[in-house]
Length: 166
Figure 1 (cartoon, rainbow, N blue to C red):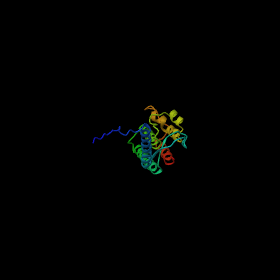
Figure 2 (cartoon, rainbow, N blue to C red; figure 1 turned 120 degrees about the vertical axis):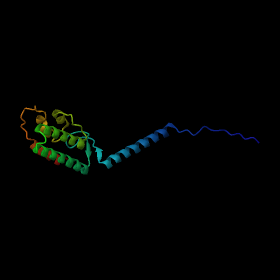
Figure 3 (cartoon, rainbow, N blue to C red; figure 1 turned 30 degrees about the vertical axis):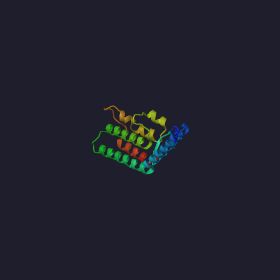
């Protein structure tokens, strides 16, 4: 007795099953990244922030406290180095500029390290434009030209702004 077997083609997924799989994978990946950013204390805020700037990163309050303390300590060291004659006033203002710009970058995610005062005013970050005016002229003053601002006062102002940063 002979038997015939008819082979059928392998089971084929239709295109919509494949697309649903991709969508589910993308949703899983999105949720995973959001949870990871939440755990690391970094999340993207959409819309207009309280300080007027748009779409910037914010960090958790605990991490922000640590960042504040780090920069306040560095500015305090700069102030002490200046008082002890280890740095000139102009070099001190240049270092103060780097510290303030680094703080803004660490807290907001906005790169202001190469921004001018005009660029910063356009960003609308509260207190930053006034703080930059503290050191901007002395930072770029000619070597022989007297600097009207006192570095220790500017350091105190910078630390005050950092302490009250929200």
